[in-house]
Length: 315
Image (cartoon, rainbow, N blue to C red; front, side):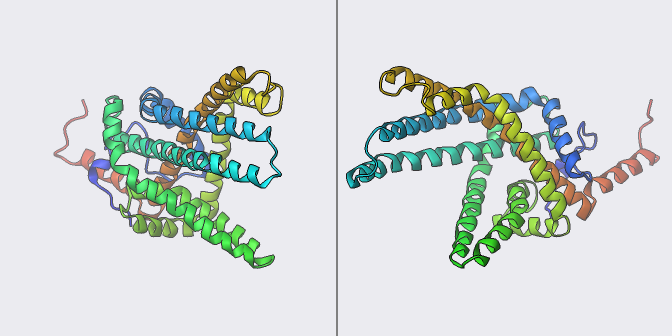
């Protein structure tokens, strides 16, 4: 059962969080929420996530440059392979860790923003206020991200079983995708413990797996499309660099500039991930409403208060 606080339910919300939603309504409501709070939400994300996203893009660009440099050497020699892993492996690990920080910050800040709107703070959410709400969520969300990755990696060991092993891993991975998508949201708005949130989501999704998977699929497609459009200039630059339109040997300074600028431009598409996390929050609220009728119960209470003799006149 979700652990709800009364202060999480604004009696007169501008946006209805706890209501039943189909997969399509989840996507449309995520867009509507982003439209209503565009300036505060993305302004806060730019301040909180932007610096780390820039650092991650620069690290990624350096990794690409090092990869291009290795591509001009002889990869078939043992010394060449040793040099490759010695030089690039630490950079790859650092790039992966910086990406983990960026996506966790994006999730935590988006979930924190929704929480503040639930608290009735819309219109007063500065980057400082958002950061104060975001910071306590980081450790929990990083742990969930690492656990999700670990479960997928350990499950991949099933591939040692011929044929059936790969099929079992694929089926299990597809089944768990909606659970992992909603796990972080449940840890923020429902059961606060990591294990408890996982159990809560499994119970909620059990009877609505198809709807959850459909919502995840629709939101993911929209996120990828928007991210592609935002980062299209950088993608074009990276494509021209990566596929030889720019000669690495004769134009090395220009190559570096194009690679770094292209990677930074392409990374702007990361902000589209806010849609993925908004969708997770809204679909989680939908599942809770179906299970516990939180929103319906609150609306009935509001009607009772309105009809009571003690209620103030409407005029």
